[in-house]
Length: 173
Image (cartoon, rainbow, N blue to C red; front, side, top):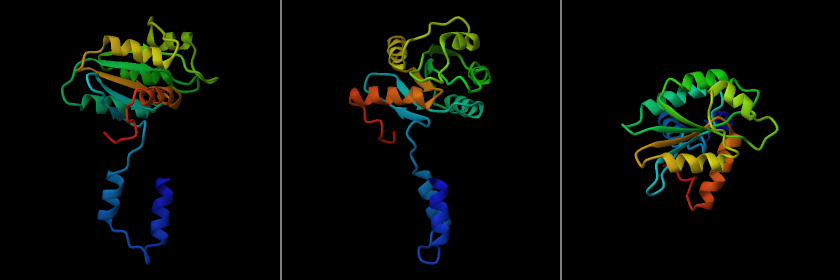
C-alpha cells in the first residue's frame, strides 16, 4: 500500500506537489496494527503485539525490547507456523531473559507441541493464545512487559480478546 501511495504521488507531482517534509511527516504517522503495537490497560503490564515471523523481525523485536525504558520481566507469548525459521528466531530471542508462554494456533500450517518443544526445550504448551495470555497475566507484575510474537495467526485472536475486554487496540499508543 505504501509503495502504491508513493507511486501515485510521484505521478501526480505536477498537480499535487509533495515535499520531502510532507513524506517524512506522513511516514512518521503511519500506524500498522500488530507491528510492535503497544497496548496498555489500567493496572496491567504493558502488552506488545508483533506479527513478526522471521529472524529479521526477531532481531528487530529484541533491539526494540532492549531499548525500552527500564522495566521488569519480559513474558513472551509465542507460536509460529511450521514453514518458518523457528530455530533461528528462538535463538535470537533467547539472548534476552524471557519467560516463554508457547501456544498452539488454530491453523493447519501451525507448529504442533512437539515442534515448539524441540526449539524451546521443556516448556508448558498452552492450548490457545488466550490461555497463554491468561497465564502470562497471572505471572506478570505491573512493571513487566507481555509480548505476543510469531504469527498473524497468534496476534489476531489476541486482538479480538483485547477488543472484547474493551481495549481500543486500534488507537496508536
